[in-house]
Amino acid sequence: MQDVNIEMTAKTPEVKLDQNSGKLELKGRSIPENSIEFYNPVFQWIDEYSLQPKSDTALHIQLEYFNTSSSKCVLDILKKLQSLNLSGRSKVKVLWYYEEDDEDMLEAGEDYQAIIKVPFEMIKISA
Image (cartoon, rainbow, N blue to C red; front, side):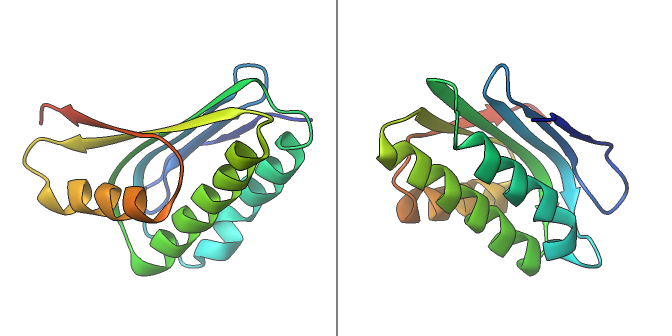
């Protein structure tokens, strides 16, 4: 299984998926032309990772902005990790980073937290 490292661009986030540590990261802006196409490698990686996960899995999300189609993809990622968590094969947690003056990003994290049955940690960062 290969780790995934996608460089950040003006429209797409940096993506780091590390099988050895169980650490998944999304950072930056997510406004790709085709969100499903961009996130497809992430979905596939999580599916493969779920077959032999680490005992602890952490998803770090530090997005400064994402569009509607990206929000659906983030939800799909969270649902896959929720399934992994509920299976008991890995303890999954989500670390949701937001800038202290970004109410929208905090609310987005809280909305996901209300939907997904995985522990969330809201982390305020200074702008």
